[in-house]
Image 1 (cartoon, chains in turn orange, yellow):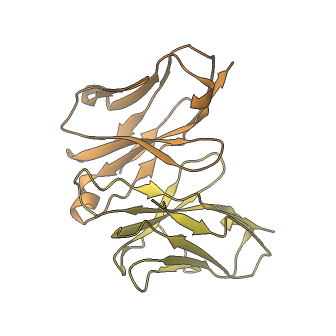
Image 2: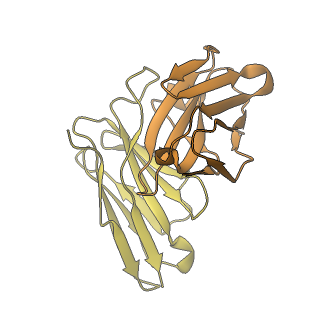
Length: 119
Length: 117
């Protein structure tokens, strides 16, 4: 069965600090996809990134970077030089290939990490 | 362009009443998903549609929950005889196509916050 664990329930840092959000996943599939979503205080879910299991290359997008390591089943998210606007709940999610073959992406989410950036 | 919309945004109902939650996906999106998110938790899958066909309803908690998408666009999630444990945020998402290509990101709506008294 698939499972996503975000062990950090809450993180609080001061603005401009770097912060890493951890995500560990479990799956028996060799083909799967990993996602990060952001839920700001307004409540919507905003897509940030998607990676497939065959692409372990790290990704950087501005102040955001993601580190995917299959050996440790982790897909961690780092925010560099954090800003107050980064305050949100961040969710990591997993979709297994069996669902994709059936023509869908059934996402399994972690419990989320509440990130607070203090000025 | 317009994103996924959901209505109502907030719904307060009394135990035992039926409620209908509406989702209007992004125009042209083939796949539509319903998730439920309890306070402090991540969203949990309920069901999904490709066009008008309900492909998987394994996440619906019991037979009081049902969903339809009769014309392959707007979808309605109905909860009959609501109970207090049904209180949650109900989220809808849509994707352009239900495949593993890069264009099928799930875009989420703002959600409907359901409170059952």
